[in-house]
Length: 274
Image 1: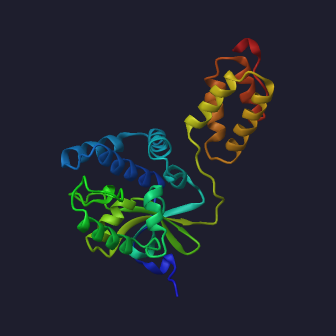
Image 2: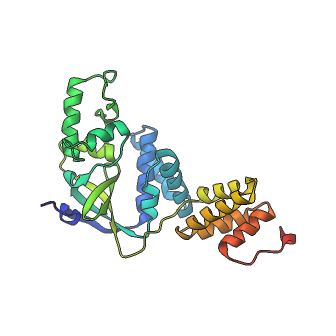
């Protein structure tokens, strides 16, 4: 019988982790990885800079890295009011590997691997034994070739769904640990609560929609853009504030400002105040 996610969490490290702390950790680990700077001075500088940022700045950085650079669901999950975060020590094979890229996904999702990190690690070890050099990579798996790291950011991000744990971020780190024979990992876990799933959409989303609305050439397009903006606004945490800020306060044309008030279902301000 398959164990549930809770049964796999052999040790709860912290029962509650603030979502802003998860965001800061993700940013630190990502920036160090992007710049390939695993040395202590760079890590300390990165931690210091991230620690000084306001919550608004953290959310914007997270939006940029998650939505624009990594194209993943971290921003949506971390800001989602429908989950609570905690820290736990988890068995490596309790976690189901999720998407990497189409080539890797075919292997990971195959019947022989079954999304199990330890099984995939053994597959990679056999592959690299057969293809020991970087320029010998017919399977296009070099991204998993073992690299020397400090291990400062080995904690991963996972989410719980229907009693199972799935990889959210840190898949390469998890696989690297599995290849080293590590059987348990530290993770930030997003577990469902009894609240409605509602996440931030990000400032750039609503600013972009405003720009598209401003440049729309006909009423049909403008109506469609307003409908899309209204849906995103009503289904997000930050939508109303973003519309107020970018459509109304930053609106340079009266038609955009008026549209912003229409979205908020508020009285339009007089034209002479624009």
